[in-house]
Image 1 (tube, each protein chain N blue to C red):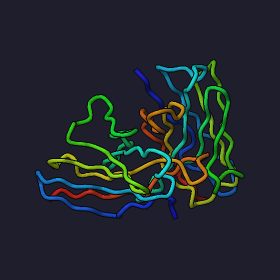
Image 2 (cartoon, rainbow over the protein chains, first blue to last red):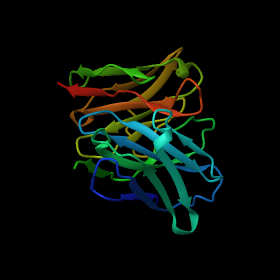
Image 3 (tube, chains in turn orange, cyan):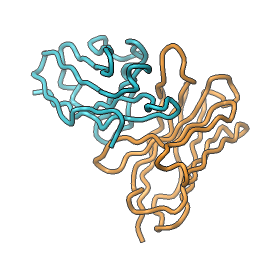
Image 4 (cartoon, rainbow over the protein chains, first blue to last red):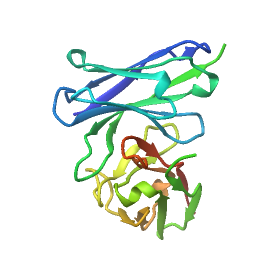
Length: 123
Length: 108
């Protein structure tokens, strides 16, 4: 079955760079149409899509955060890494990674999610 | 502000039908997907595409779309359905994804 798990620091200082890793199983990012996305949720607030990477290395970023985000994949390790530069307290959130198939006749959707990891930004 | 607009809160009496809507120009061209999120848990996909339910999702959940509005309906709401619901689709450019602001559903 498909599983995903996020890992990374729980506490980050302002201005630092945050690096999060999504380790998954049950699928391969070298398989056509497969993608992995990152979504975050500040405490008590709504979900926010951050970035997406596909099997063919196509990458998409939230326009509002594009300058600060980088998403990469390591197919051999079954991992996707998200880096966010110049971290600020407003970036405090639970960060989720999720499995996605490339949009087709059934549209876009994230069908499997990790449990999420809470990242707190504070000095 | 999100390009997909949801009512912040909706309530429904136990056993009744409730509709949660999601509005946005991109919905004229793209399907919405819907997620249920309970406190302290990750979101769960409940509806995708025209009106598809993943395995294990109750058939009292359904989706529809008309014009710039996507709707998620629970027919015969149960206490366990009390949760936050989010819609997700592409933005107006079609190149990126966006979530709605979420709707908190209360079952009375």
